[in-house]
Length: 320
Image (cartoon, rainbow, N blue to C red):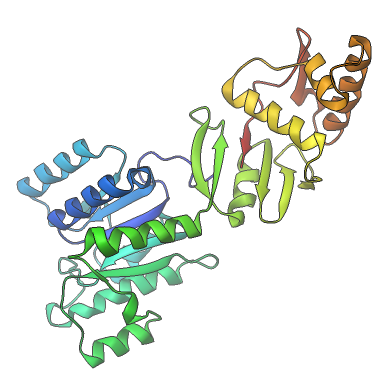
């Protein structure tokens, strides 16, 4: 997944764009207090000018909040609005959230006497997405807007009523960010890619990306359960509540936890109950797993060893 590697400048669900470090630190601290689970989903772009004070404050913020991805102004193209927007668009996940200061005073291509033109940076970023454009929310510590600026917001596709009061971080800004995040990324994928069992926020619209990056994916979303991934010609719809879904789930969870496989007898017991003879349980389990293997382009993706069924170690898996 282009966005799944959470190191460095990878895409994250939430991107905050601020012009001054002290504002950034206040917002990150407010998030850390109220919604710490959002910190690993957060990239913060700090547009403060370079200098020893900025470098020291940047390093302090990074040390205090190592889960947050920090981007300095020197890492972005600030020569033009288009170049800056393209760099910032590479940081946010499709369908993600951009929180931007409404007045980015440190941008050299924004005239000081036309500070409200910062809003067009957010509009430009949004327009770079052909599909699933991010939602943009502005923050401001100004006490109201004149009629012209409100009109500019509307013409750029924004609702002036959505502008958040920066002085009300705990009361307004953080709850809005949390609400947007939960609504736009309501599901969680556990993946064997990278760290075993890692949790990443996703939406149903991310299914194709997840399947393209894994060999096997059990997806349980709004459209019903499906099995997909590179080991299938195309995603297969599964019957809700079926034994097949249960076995795929157990196999994938076993692979994520690296427990060593499902005992053959236990697989059979789940199919008919514990009163059957061992030979019958073994035969039922074998037929059941044969049906699972038949869905795959490589039947050796499910191995049998030491009277256990397991997904082969070289098969990448994910479950939602």
